Length: 125
Image (cartoon, rainbow, N blue to C red; front, side, top):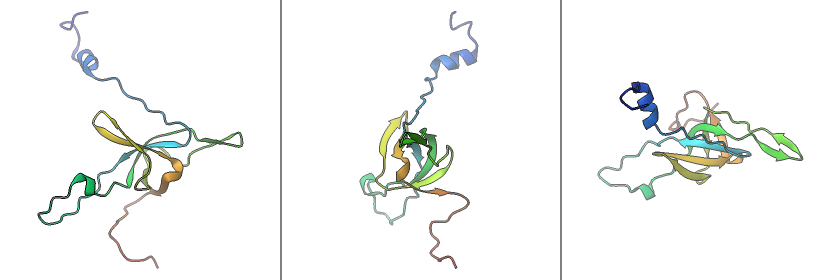
């Protein structure tokens, strides 16, 4: 079949890259890190190496769990959740133009829900 007789949708499918499917093993979790808000320091230029690493992101994929005494212990995190993780946790890798991170479930510190403000300094009473 020549490209002249193809529908536009078929042409688009030929040009599109095949979808990359990632399946983490054991208790690993794939996270897309959120860009942290960059602090303003007047006219000073802050190089990327001096910036803080992100510590929160969205869960894209979750492994089946780890084996413990012959039984599968499932991971307590679900796809789509927003989580906090350790600053230097995981293994970064790049897919297309997107930076992703593979971390162990034990490196995830908390699950975020609702409208949280990071700048509130008041203590709960």
